[in-house]
Image 1: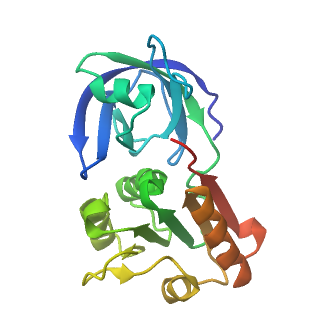
Image 2: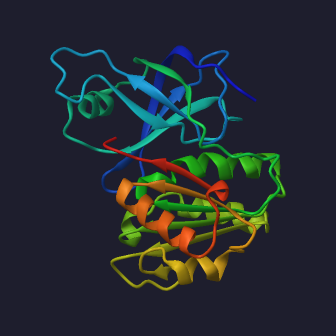
Length: 238
């Protein structure tokens, strides 16, 4: 289904702290707004004297399309946009244009899916997996998410609950800077991908910082995954 992007206004509801510097910002879902799991909006905040980064940012809608609210999940920052975002009070409004992007869950494609993420890049997968849970989809989905430390991970409890209820979904977190029982150790690599996924038939989704995306794309290409089975989204300068 193709959804034409349009301008909308959303009312701020609340802010929830997920880690030391990552927060979720909840907004009322405007009447008539629809999106596919994994899509993003370009969010805009009017302000005086914005810095060189400007008054808008692209952010994934970090929630299932079936919910009646919208979520931005992001780290704190020093830009004028981030300062204004973190200063929003209940009832204040923010403008956005969307939905945008083709990095989405195709529930009609029954091939196994492997979701590979680095850090905050997990947000589109959270939208996809919670949607899959709410729809009780039977698609086989493997999530491999990389974080530096246990204290920095997000959505771990929520997604583990999804995987417990839907056996076709498996959730694996790996930590690059510490060894913790129950987690994989190190960056996402060839051995880890082969351990958890069917390389011969799966569709691979890759999202994260450009360097991480380029590295993992090289890995999956080297183990025989064709370009047609690789979907990519770069998170740059959010």
